Length: 255
Ligand code: GLN
Image (cartoon, rainbow, N blue to C red; front, side, top):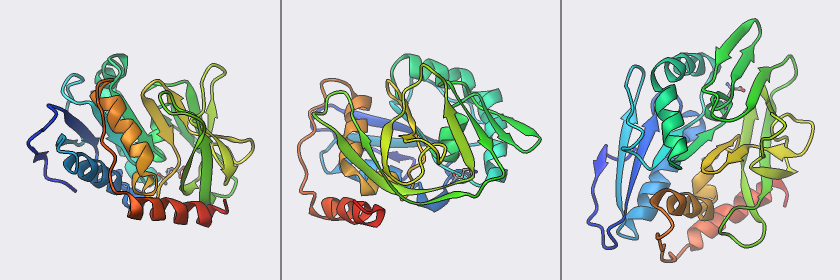
């Protein structure tokens, strides 16, 4: 994980301020690698980068960060974080979303963006940032490599996100809510149907681990640009390794 403050001199006057929510508890499948990838791609472009961890009990300032990140976790850790999110951080995250900060939530984190996560008899609270709910049914876990097709503002044509999913929960989007993408291979939100994740403006939830961003560096750049603002002009990077990682993840998913 990067140092809490990692101030690169900024050639362009840009800086990405990240808030990492529960970096120790919500870090399954090395989801923390997503932060490392963001840090490196900013550093390579001389964009300032700082990451502030926010754990149980910590309040957060919605104005102080451009991107809020919440990874996935085991059910037990997720329940701890869910209560804290709902009681301590909910209002700040709503305020952050209202000012168009980027909120990226993976798997367990994605589930907590919604209203509730029903785990047997227990109803775990979400923060209600998007209209969805998740149910941990009796069925098998939805596990495997996955690829989805996404269309994002500012990018021409459809793109592919590839990763790995492993979730017991089935996530149901409300009628007005838009998925992040269409499943090409894999299970997606419910295992029945072809939708994966959620996106409302700059709030993004997805089941893709892997970690997500090292396998999809183009998506990391989209998030950085959305977080820094419309004037962010991100110079291209020599991405041979990143393209190879993306191609390998697509091959693993069978496309
Ligand atoms: N605990 C959640 C589930 O199984 C999320 C797991 C995860 O983050 N991989 O549905």
